[in-house]
Image (cartoon, rainbow, N blue to C red):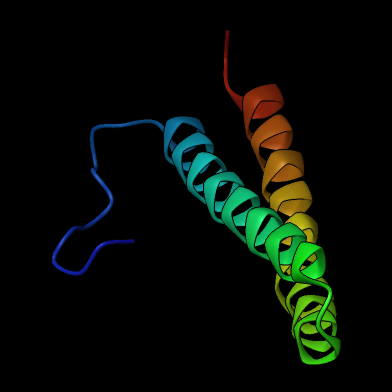
Length: 81
């Protein structure tokens, strides 16, 4: 979340979750591009950095996106409708 911005009290939780998911997916894509670029350079240190980014950042982002998507589905089922 950007500093100084708060979650709107008028927007549904599902909408907020969808925006968070979208932003995390954009970050995940940026990390994937960085990993691919590092590996393409084919330098030993770059491969190590790429592996760290993949395991410590991209994989964790993927896990959190999946959790948020599950929360979004649970929220949608609970809403009257």
